[in-house]
Length: 156
Image (cartoon, rainbow, N blue to C red; front, side):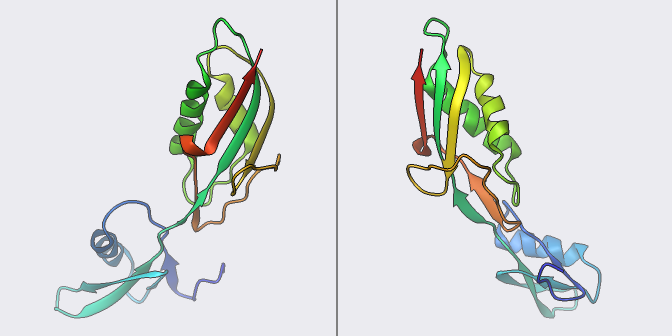
């Protein structure tokens, strides 16, 4: 299934060195099970034989966000606080294959002091996004949110 060869495992991996990941996969998979992926690393077994171990590093999908919100001019923590809340949410929740669900981003924005309403949130994979629907992320992709790609338009 999913384009993976029979009798194999496909690990989509964040972190670790390629050598450490390959060694861990080699040690944890059952004998006779192949590995699948776009990265190949040679691992030596206990008898000194070399084996190819494969896995995949996820493709980073750069997410651009534009947010129109209404703020309380006295208590609003600031546009930077909104950016920080979105980045914190992304870091805590986005792993490979997790879609960008706009209503969950709106909930994170409402956690910022002084936000009264979120009028609209636009998201996309390019500058000046116009989409107002969730972004689909494939199982071998990772959504990335950074402050440089967030535009907050706050009014009162």
